[in-house]
Length: 88
Image 1: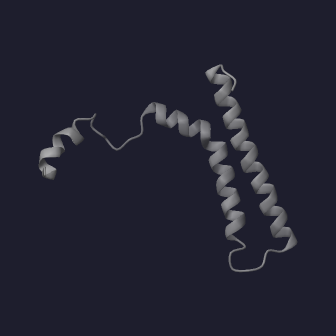
Image 2: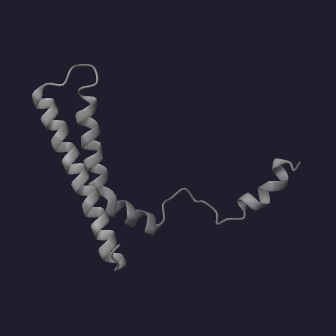
Image 3: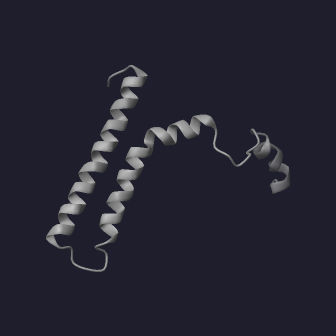
């Protein structure tokens, strides 16, 4: 059985992590930001009704937020397919 110290060289041989995201990671986050914000809005709408029975207005708010989140995901996937130049 190898000790952790013996395996450390193999684990740390990868590029050093400086704690900051790369430019490619920042670009990916920027591309996904509309979907991320739509998911946050959906979570906010759902969280508001955790401790009570949702009213009709709450249900509409959740339904609209869910549709926005799905549309944002759809747009993100369509953009990725268009950029890659292929269709499934």
